[in-house]
Length: 375
Ligand SMILES: Nc1ncnc2c1ncn2[C@@H]1O[C@H](COP(=O)(O)OP(=O)(O)OP(=O)(O)O)[C@@H](O)[C@H]1O
Ligand SMILES: [Mg+2]
Image 1 (cartoon, rainbow, N blue to C red):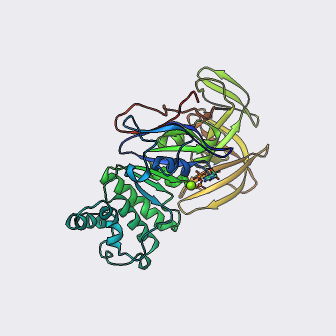
Image 2 (image 1 turned 180 degrees about the vertical axis):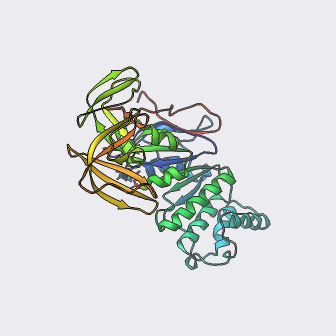
Image 3 (image 1 turned 135 degrees about the vertical axis):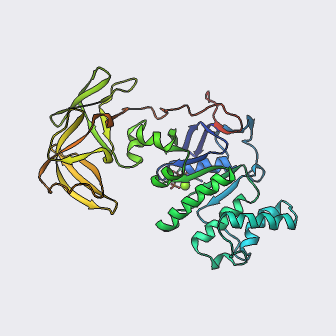
């Protein structure tokens, strides 16, 4: 897709999105409600016309091609199964529409039933299935005709947590087995991190960063992405300045530092909660730290979340794995320390387009969204 934009009246739902979808990848659109994820998916599917820009496939413009002729599979939150048809007939429906003969239809439906784990349920009606099973039928129906691209809009959001995690796992398996390109929409950060080869972060109609889950988590391009993907502690440094390859600055009477980024000096030093230690002893020579008091501990089974406050009132979040030494007392002054290498600066005032890898790469066999940059 090249610079695709979408306006609803005076409102810009998408601002010239450039996106290159790679064959076979699991790409997730992640962002807050109203950020434009569904709108872009609908443009990709052919249900919405972009106000500007172009959707291409292998270099050919498909912007004007209707949804049914794009031949993409689709799964949405409301499964929209046919209530009067059996599971097998629901799954086989796209083949019937395409005039596939009965024998081949039955063989392909049987393969799909195995793939999505519905053996033994073929002759049931949708209303006799659980929510998770219904979603499996929807998935099988979307995949049965072998689409090159499968579009999924929050397909798991109606399911309870355990079932959702189970289906996430199965979805990943199905992606691996079929080799189909998946474009998946969610506003659940953990789901995105767990499933995706790449995640595109949406904010106010822009893709602000697109990268692998690991790189997004460890090197967010701006404060929005940093805070959106998991929790993070951000220290606003006073008088930030360069020293050797680092930026140093003061916070709470301590000098903190982190490796400098390219470009402008940033005063926002970030540390993920899992790297913070909370203890009585101050920082060692390869560590940084600040003074704080413990305000609360939240036990979460496998880990404990510690909420702390610094003297200036900033809240810090630390995470302790289960089995680590017992914690300090509430309201008693402590040190919060971290290995200096774990501190990371976040670009300030980053242009929303800043990315750690190019949004558009030239690779064969991909769908592209682009705009006429002159428009
Ligand atoms: N048909 C429409 N007419 C007017 N405004 C629309 C229309 N469709 C979407 N919008 C607006 O465009 C913006 C983006 O909507 P979109 O559905 O793409 O968001 P989303 O990221 O999918 O959000 P959610 O996570 O809530 O599903 C929203 O502000 C929405 O109100
Ligand atoms: Mg949506």
